[in-house]
Length: 319
Image 1 (cartoon, one colour):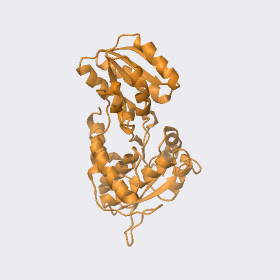
Image 2 (cartoon, helix red, strand yellow):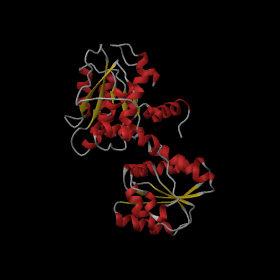
Image 3 (cartoon, rainbow, N blue to C red):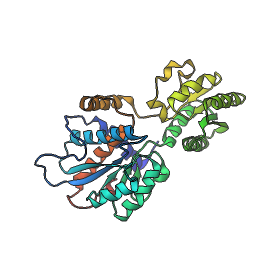
Image 4 (cartoon, one colour):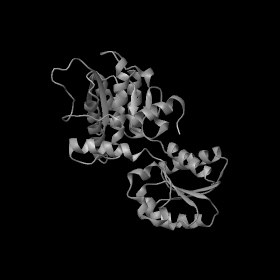
């Protein structure tokens, strides 16, 4: 859970998708006939390559939010981070007068864009979930694994769990989920009795068998919902199964008998459903789950822009 100002900002972002109204859009720059001069904001996302579908969905969601908000003093331009890299995209955006950057998507892209933006004193609100990419003037909007793990461990501890275990992939995400688990369990006065890692489905099942030889009250499967569906039946009955925010974008987890009754922490699907309806009505297709970050980042910008005089630097203090 977030606390203080960070919590208030997070809740603002999560509730932002309740602003629903009519919209229209077109690719590239968002223009309004006869509009007065507006502050310029850049959206940096991949529009091609492996993450092109994700980037386009985020960009469309950002456009949707601008029209839903009815803001007249903001103009958005989309820049492709696959065309020369995120650093080059950030430099182009700044040369063209943008005074706020929304994105990029991946941590390494954020680190590439950050020095360019910092030199120009242009703040960055990135879509990454890697908190280590945050820096002076660089803010992380993505859902961090530590938030979900801390929340679900707290719930398990309040229900009597004291001995925790984990099954996590050999990846950066797995490492962060493990560290988040250790930190959260220590805060609850519990004990991590075992962590098993894997790199393939066969290794995952073997890891579960090794873990089953230990005594624990709850086990975290720190992977996607798809993997959890495959791995859950290999976990012995009895201990509570816990998940991360990745489960929210997976298939129906209840189709596995072993995972029924499992817990994971994630944003409410109620507002996600509202967002999907708006997005589909406009674009005729389903958005990716993290497209909401594009929507929320724009509504956060709109809120801040109430005190953003046209042509001046973005009022970073409001963040």
